[in-house]
Image 1 (cartoon, rainbow over the protein chains, first blue to last red):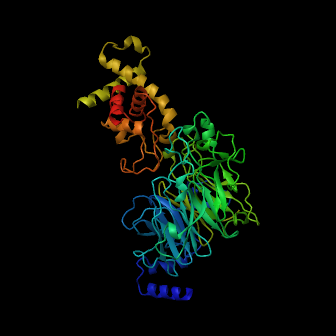
Image 2 (image 1 turned 135 degrees about the vertical axis):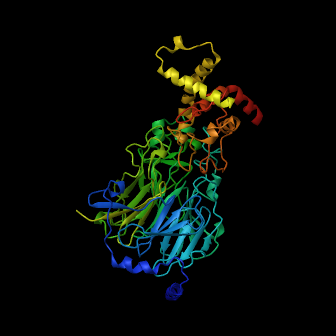
Image 3 (image 1 turned 180 degrees about the vertical axis):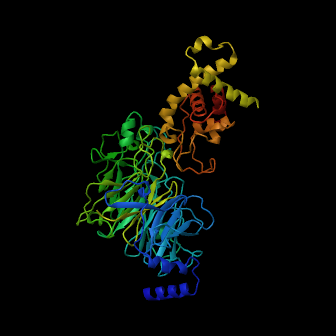
Length: 434
Length: 152
């Protein structure tokens, strides 16, 4: 079956039906490998010793998630209103210097999710997921005719991104974010209490599993794989453990909604941004609980009778890693490459978009963090890996941040790519050692 | 034309006041324009307290908002414009519509602040219309009262 598909796609490519093919550049690309030149200022980033960085491209627009083919082409998903035929960009380095010389596009739907698996490129709008067959050069064969595999997903403005990842058994996982902060009767209204049970969880606030190869699936065709997740933008399949990992955006506004229970400082420090290792049927507890990284406990949300001291339901799963509050983890990537030193292998990179809900205190995040995972898949202590995206020492108002890390991808040579949805920059981080 | 003059004058007086060491003696206190400017200063100061309490978390300390989530107030046509009734109504009712604001869409919902008094709403709106790069005439408690009566 696989053979038939690849032979067919080769035939289609040779027949010249692939409008994204650029045959002339292929020989050039293959002729000059490993001559990637880092920018003199490492693209403005602060990196651990031995690492350097370059800007592959700049000014692309709202560059959300990214995926890199085995040949090194970068597919970038753009969000919001996109120019005609520019919803998914393909960046190609035609001379091997690391910079993208050729940029082509396809599609007319803004969105966040993009992934490559088993010869297909998957991309999402805020309501649907599409896929495109790739030829053996990693090029989309029919850019104008994607297959719509999932449709009708809920989008009510808030937490609308439909991030995606795939496992090794033909399934695709889609985040459907809750269209609410904490499931109050009136969203973000001071004093408004939580709805019980939270009706949003029927169609959002979790991860849904669908088949990667079936057309026009909607809620009835999918499985609510895990629930009680407010909004997951970063998720990845961990191949070491054969398990889905997600990064949750924790709730906002503890002080604004309950000023008598939480101070500005507590609002800035609570709750943790959390990494979960999910099993089918798990419930992470949103909106009923939030995770306090100082007490290392699940706390009852104030909308449901909590006061910052009462613990929440024990039936909900615990996170495997807790990060500082409000930093907005927008991408998760388990590193399986060989370019970086051994400690990075099987560890997790997380792109933190940067906070806004810490105000009036200074904002945090705007960096890529790293969590090592040992041979048994147990996470260690997290650290900042790449910093300096904001371009300023202290971000007081969020619009002061120049660049905001949003997407992560691993290149065929083990390079780490980072996208920025503020200025539309694509970074490439490489390791040359010592 | 008339409205423009009124809006620029108090700001001009404000700047003058900032350079004066003994403002009370030198100010032509009996002229109506001076009364208006003293009024706007007091209103802006009171409004700032309300801004810090109710608005700053989302609209940020620089009035710049959060890209694509919470709209900016600094430089926003809806804040600076003549349609004060719309601005007052947003504070009273909150905002959950998917509409374009100066060419952008924003995802987050805004809470209603109808528990604030007419005076407090007038003050906070006068503050945001006269902070950062913004310069516009004051919103009065009378104007807030009229809108509140209409939307009830």
